[in-house]
Length: 112
Image 1: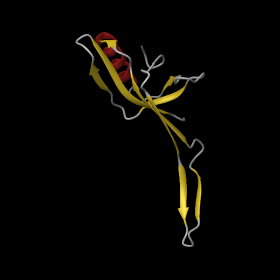
Image 2: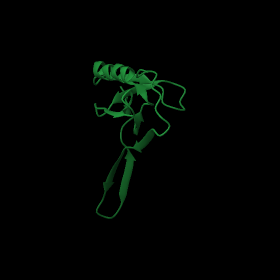
Image 3: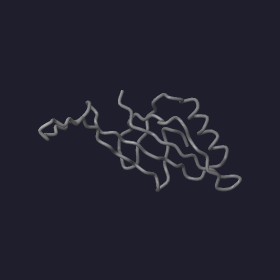
Image 4: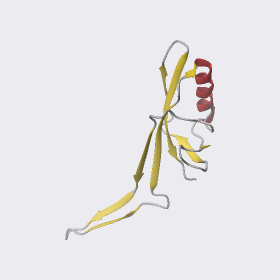
């Protein structure tokens, strides 16, 4: 498993938010508009399926090597790969057994 071929567990969470700017005037009038050219922010909370410790170490090394750089990934139920970043740049290990573990981290859609 690598960042490009990442398949999260079924319980992975996708969150979407829409950035807006809002101004409230003294007469009670409120104006709202979208913020920026790409106002939709998408994030995935990803947990890998149980992997061997060696595969987790390999994926962790890829995360370290990638650092803050963007990478391409095709999210579940999508047809095209898009650009993503690890944000925040951190991950957690969860041990299932002495020989199996899962990595958890958050990726966000990156517009460059």
